[in-house]
Image (cartoon, helix red, strand yellow):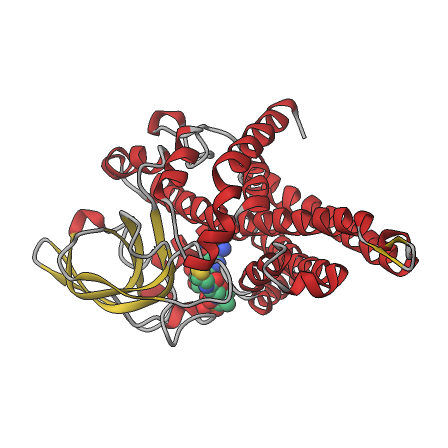
Length: 377
Ligand code: COS
């Protein structure tokens, strides 16, 4: 880590210890999202880290963003994910939007006054994203959207929705991307999903019923929607991976600290070689996952398309989080399974990391396709 990253990490840690950690147990039980925490992260310049300064961003690298997200995730995966997805939305607007889009939407998003949401999945199109059925019919002056998006992170609390909808034929080339504002007529939200983890972050259906979207809210041109979504996911997968690294690191910290204190058979349980080997494996896996995330982040920072390394990093980091959080509960024994200790929450928060932004099985599809391309040249 460079000096700036160490400084960033320390200030994020202080904010999280003061503002987030004290609420986590209560808010997890009550599925309570606090907008003031997100606003606070915004005031620290953390909600638009990679965006240019002219739109209120911090103009930092993707690697810097990974350092920040890793640190937030040690205290709350939910707020880290809210920042990650909202920044993905900003990156889409910054890369594919017009100057008017950027001036209109970015400043409040980068400042953390508002949140952005990414709407791709539908009930029958999760992994097979190109089969989505939400339609955008061309009408005078714009498009009319109809359909339902599922499992949308920050649904209902976001101001700006990037929505992929079908303007053309079946398949990826018939999909377009739109900016839809909260409060648009015909936009509503389904029930909050009752989830295993990520309870603080609201996940909802986003419903479009004859929702009119002005023509200027089409991003790029008709048919570009799938490419816009896929390239955004290349970044989103890396940032999700960095959140997994933070969660895994925190779970490892908890396991080591507990095992140094807990005594059985007249010694700290850390001193049993069986547990030492577990913790050595956990520490090695976390370190390896972090290095892969940094490599993928560096590829983004150098502007090289990075689908293969992004998928590798997302898969390895999130599988590591699942394994390390599970082992941390195991090391804690009976109390680890109760809410007296936070490690049961960490294990619940880990699971969906293997599913969101493309399941880890889909990451293998992406990796294998890229390998085939490389080796067929
Ligand atoms: N960047 C830019 N363009 C990309 C791209 C990327 N990362 N990935 C694909 N594209 C382009 C392709 O080049 C292709 O364009 P051309 O036909 O002009 O070459 C187009 O997009 C369609 O791509 P492809 O043919 O690979 O589409 P598929 O339907 O075969 O994609 C997978 C299959 C599995 C890769 C895709 O559906 C996927 O990623 N699914 C998971 C979805 C997901 O992550 N959902 C989570 C939602 S957010 S929680």
